[in-house]
Image (tube, rainbow, N blue to C red; front, side, top):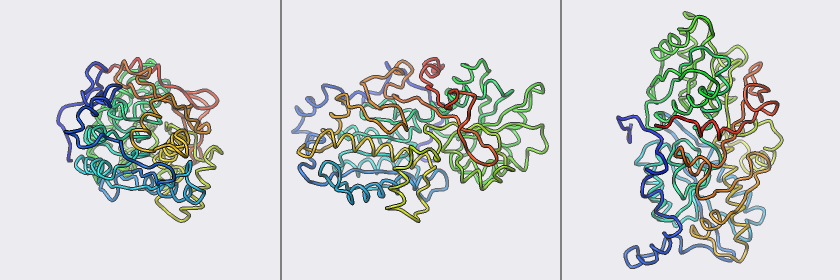
Length: 442
């Protein structure tokens, strides 16, 4: 796979963050200004004012053999159509460009360079596993990255990244904490990729918080067409403790359902185990396709960032989808990527309203507004969002992670519903900040 590296990645401490991650701190604008002759133009110095359109970009992988997120650019296009049909934002029409990163590092870098060439005001609500490829071009052009999916640690270190959820770190920490009290041996089946290398530490942080030993770390090809060998290995490890039922945790993105096909054929040869995973690897569509109440996910814990899709707080998003994208099969209101894109554009809307109808909209003014203490309400879908220069999790390498809330859901009678126990009490919501603070990132 393009961009694959052979050594296991670690979570960088704040003191070892790349130079590029701090290149646009408080003094960077002045520095770039002094280099205008060399740069040709100060990043973000041009853009819309008055009633000019505001140009942004949303990217995600599509039509690949591994992870695909077509709902994210589709949601972005629907949002722009709806916004423009209702007068725009603060007098500005919204122009959304989309890009396919093809789930490889070269594609991610191309999307970022295109964003710079197009002079977009921001990249909004996007997904890519290759933060080390796209963040540098964005930072060089001064373009903020609002509401990425949180699939890599780079999104929680770059000073121009403005995440809206806790990404994979929060999901895995929350899942570990929920499973600690109920599982014997736990087998994590995850991609043999750079992004996959980052998952075990976070799951283990939640297990540790619950007094449980680390999970078994099992690597699998991200784009395999069957996982019989991996299913057998996972089951052997999970059933190694005869005194407690084990758990198998597949976290393979779009290939999780492929793994479960192999898992179902293999599990009868072993004692019973429980399954659990994170939203994004499994949603209601996958649960239905794998047998519903009679399938392997019945009773499984699944952690997510937001309330279940049935929650009334998603009604505004569903209204936009119904009005502007009815019949578009790419947009599933229960998809975490679609939900993240909605929240990211909610942030963009708040930024443009803060700048105001007469204000100049550019990557520079969007960035300064986000850095200027703006607080964004998402209608209860997340805590109020804001981005201090360094958040509470800076000490473990996540200075930009500002929302570590996790919702715990469970499959009951074939339906994904809010859990009432495990983490988060009656509301099934928990803040994973303290758990992540205690993660072993060395």
